Length: 194
Image (cartoon, rainbow, N blue to C red; front, top):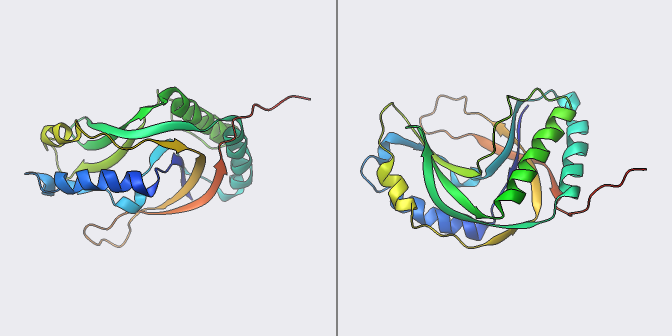
């Protein structure tokens, strides 16, 4: 099964972002992007890829431990940018150190559970909005429009494990489907040995 750990913003914050994305989709060149679907909007913490089902119990235990050790923290969706010439994203502001720590703990939980993870890179919190369909799509006007976006603040209170189902029907515009397979409250208590 294809899995990732994530933070999912509350519906109110996703609606705020949705209003901006509606404007983006009316800009020249918007048809050159494959837009992500709103039901799938999330902040990926640790992408695990294909995970053997027998690792799931240990993975759940370790992600629960990571959530148990991490206190809730404030975030807001803010601004945006792009990776290369292909990926457009909305950014985040708030307690980015806490977000990075939760991402690192999620990555470590997966590794300790036996999940073969990609090479560890410095975490950059973002919410993917779209990907260019071809090479050379200009993303500057979209990033400029996102520049003034300031979403409302919320408190991150949960770590979520998500299963993704990639499109396979060959239907144009078909989007991945996501299913929450586990969630744990952020409790902010360090474990004690002994």
